[in-house]
Length: 429
Image 1 (cartoon, rainbow, N blue to C red):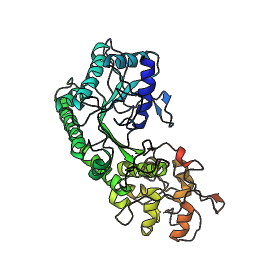
Image 2: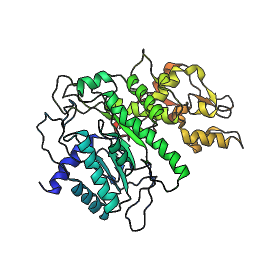
Image 3: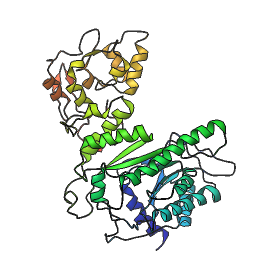
């Protein structure tokens, strides 16, 4: 099998892993080396789902000794298999870089022979790129659960970012759909990477030229909709992972039916893209807006609304806290107003130090008044008169709601193409 055919097979097989990013590392070029890893990231190409990236995203192999029921590459599936050698993958990366196709590499893999053997293939690939080719571009590599700690540490010294996919939100779900994996086995390398990153930061404060360990941090991925786990379970787990392991990102992937198995949702079902989108919005609220998972969902309400984004939903359930006067409200409360994002909240706090704000100024600042007008006042006055009833406001905030109020077009949060929005973007304003 030639390199091109391997690339077609293994590049396509890697599309289900969404936990990749081309940012977060500032690896500088060395004298005589090639490539850079910029902390801001570089975007030169587009994936099939619309994300702009600059990485060669590929599997080392789609051979796998595991039989995860949701995975297309599970050992019991009759699919065309292929495998790169470390030399082939390193050469391919360098050739693509020279042609300006990519700025870095995202490498994952099925488990071939054993976790240790798979990690050794990763390490050899990274060694060729870093030592022989002196490649300084961005590299994201998977840490394989069950691999020896020494191998993970060695890979971390050459990678910019690592990730360990937790896959499913609960131990019960893992036992049912991925019997070869365990929650403890997944969290162990995640904890190891976290501890080594902290140690390395302390070391770099003392020894400026000490080698960096995973400077771009680590991430993980969860599948949404393959099990009966609720949105509440998923978002609670994400909150715990951010706090305990200091993850850069938790990625969410709507379950795509690929295997015919009684343990899985119907193969004829559609991917729960709206549900994935809502969880991404909630994740943004946790990371940047000061929300807690317990505020967004409860035992009585374990799933997010289909018609309202999590921030609007929270605001309506806490309608008694509004309206807020934008000239006096705290920064923390401004962040909780639908239609006001992190940037606009900072601008409001800064601008009101020198002058009282009016609605025209708020619009220039970037406040989405179609949403915010129901929750804010300026000098005690609303932008437009409206019945102060929660049901009325909810009706005007729901997806597709397009009534008129005071001559202004009302909120349609995402237009006619909700699912074309880029998942993970800050759509919580």
